[in-house]
Picture 1 (cartoon, rainbow, N blue to C red):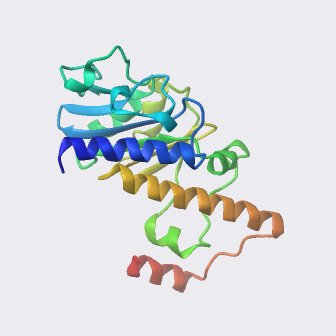
Picture 2 (picture 1 turned 135 degrees about the horizontal axis):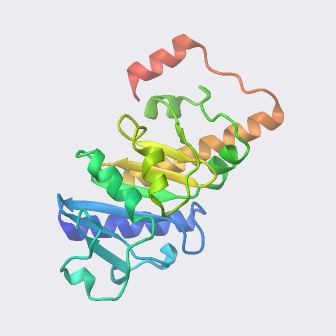
Length: 213
């Protein structure tokens, strides 16, 4: 996929996250790695609902801005860029990182409630678990320390009292999975209001894992 296509998908994913209420204001940050030392990310203090190409920043693996036609501006990268760099350092297979603040998912961490129920086939099939990283001050090295062990074996990490970070091959796929997770959290929330959620039987869970539909 060409760089221009990766840029288009990043902008689309960011705008969709804003439109769907998965971020608000100037929240959230997104990035794609197009070369081993070439990362395109969203600029600081930018509303993602109106994101354009001029709002993007190109950095190297250390987070420094590099020469690029996309860098003909004074934008700075997000204050949470180190979280993205941590992922790219730890996972050579990852080409995209998405960080958002899905309300229902985060609310579960605010209440200290478990997110790992085996109630929806789509979630069981797509995610082996929904790990939660301990609270870390956003924009600091604490975040790196809180996620480094988890991201080695997981493509999604919920950040306690904060948000979520998702990693993978394609930024749009990450957006679609984020929608699924927030829908799951809403379903779980409603189920808890109605009563105690009932997990699917173990045989059904194992069948879903093997089927991976």
